Amino acid sequence: MVNNATKSDGQILKGLLDTLVLDVLRQGPNYGFGIRERLRSRLGEDAALVKEATLYPLLHRLEARGLLDAYHEPGQRGRPRKYYRLTLEGAAFLEGRIREWRRIAALLGRTVLNTEQASDGEDKQ
Amino acid sequence: MRVSNLLRWPGTGFPDILETGDAELDDYLRVLDRHCLGSRSVRRQYVEEIRDNMLEARDQAVKAGQTVEAANASVVADFGPAEELARVQRQQRWRNFRRGAVTMGLSFALLMLLFQLLAGGLADPGPLVLAEMFVFHGLFFGFFMGFWFAFMFAPAAPEGGVSAQSQMDKADGYEVYSPGLSKVLAILLGLVMLILGGMTVAGMLGRGLMADVGVAANLLLTVLALHVAFGLRVAFTRIQVDGDSIRIRTLLREYYLDRDSISKFEELGRLQQAIYPMAGKTYQLHWQDEKGSHALYLGLNGEMVNGDRLRVLLRPE
View 1 (spheres, rainbow over the protein chains, first blue to last red):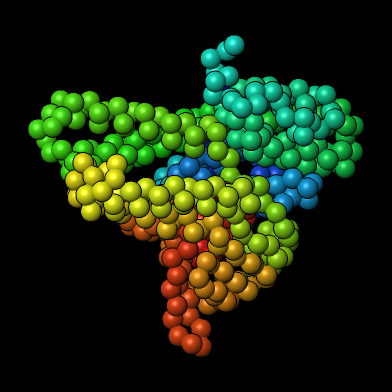
View 2 (cartoon, chains in turn yellow, green):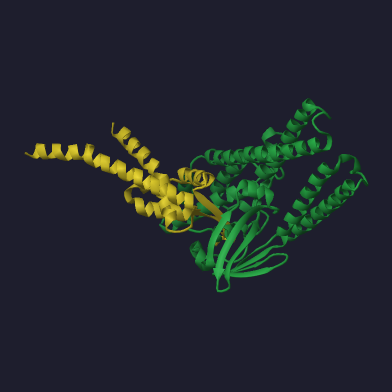
């Protein structure tokens, strides 16, 4: 039961990952490892959810959809490094996703979380 | 020989240059490369990205106190099965193939159909033969060009200065240019097109090999030949980026502009791309300075060193 709940949390957070990646790139262009590090520092105790196995396919999918633009620069190891940058379409998509998540958060606040608080209050009484 | 190796030609083996010296990482990268599609240079671009990020993740874990062996094992576990990462690359390549085959096959088949109609009308050689030729041209050219751009052609590797964490406004200097081989090929293809153009002009005057084709069909071929020849001038464009200063040298003119003065940079629409003679993608660049407003059609293609860097630099945020 506990395992199922944890798995379900993971699914929700994975669903958030595209928004999180786009949000990291809103701060400026970055490359795979740099994006992972920014995500991990933001996610704190949920950092383990960001696995490269998920991140790289996601970056390539976002690029194919035109939400990210990619370019190569000579890297510090002497080999080219691939950077990603948010496109205007990507920025608009991100705004839309943020609005959606806000609506969901507000809905949860009004319903499930509110009910929980109310029942907590009743329990205390 | 495995059939999939036909899509991994030329250079089916793992590029030595990608070896890290760590057996565990190299084994992973070998499996990744074996499951990717495309020529060695196409596969290398994908494997290289994974490899470099693996090495950074490994180095960070070692700095954090892990042994190299433990760090390698944890990096390999984090990246997941190499076959899964390769599946993403294969999907990309096939998507590129489908897109290229359809757009280029259809364009070529339509041009050939138009040529046939102008040369002989609908009656000669007849609608059925015209339909067969349309399908043949579409499939043949579409397959060839789709295959080339999806599985054979890799964009030029970048050169020049490294940006500070790629904050593009602080980028060190670099140049955008076509390598020598591209220039030689552009000259050769340009000469072929000019010879073809000369033959079709002679044909319009009732002379030479193209005399029997008719004026309209010869006119179409003349326009196409000149279109291709004129578009090849992009191979001689050279752009120098030094901080915020950009210097663009085309075959005929030279422009100086500041990045801050750019008011618009956008890719032309599909129809405009087809009409405007440029080998590669054409962008419209607008900027303003004390002398007034300026506009330029700028061509960029995958053969140009640092072309993708410049495209992203010029694009508004």
